[in-house]
Image 1 (tube, rainbow, N blue to C red):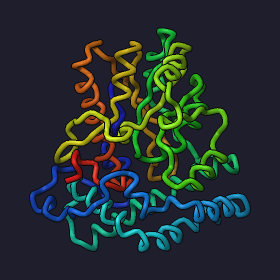
Image 2: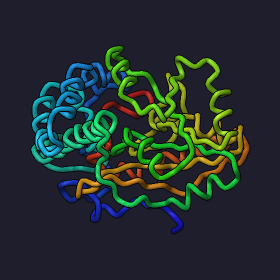
Image 3: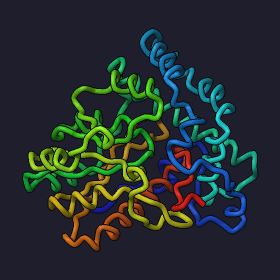
Length: 331
């Protein structure tokens, strides 16, 4: 099966039908100017404290899965009014996707984003705490991953904050792929960081750029051994990143995937983990991308990845969990 697996919105959209169109001028005027500008800013008014996560983990350990599942809308309804910056960011993201509608309809859809977010967190904790994997749909694009690994070297996987990305390492592990090293930023809350480390699947290596001075050499060693390195392309480290087109403007995307592809001659494989309407989790593997070997082409490769990312954002608008202003410069 060649090509991409971005499904038509009509077959896997969220609760309400969605017709992806370019944002109108009136929509642009409705986007607020006081949105969080970085992930850290969003998290300061977000749900990154360890307290609520401990309660959720306790419920997962003690309660039947059916009760946990039934309680998730209540979690969303309890926390959503308490995070005004997150609400503004969600509404702005929906507007940029062309969700031009009445204020009430827009608010309903924004709450739908928050419901899906709570659901994905619960899915991840259910697996890492109790070993209960969400029901899966068949993986699509396995031949793309096999083709990427045919040369005996590893591959760089890229994903974003879309769908059930937290379960990505476990899902890929169940498909029999090589060991995975995940590069990710630390949580801004120290207690949450400690908790996440304690719960995480020990079979997956997680490295933090701020704690790994020789990160490039460590990743090189993994890739040369035929293993996988995963990065979230929508979160460049610090102020770095490549400026590429996204939605109604430009955004900074991580430069690491293009750099590793060029330096080590390994493919970049996009993979996403959206939730289906029936509650099952999908693993969608896209065809490999390759570097031309020229540093000047890093931007072109990254722009292509950003364009694919945008297609998934448009196909799954209520599963886009970047609660800050991604536009370059923030305005």
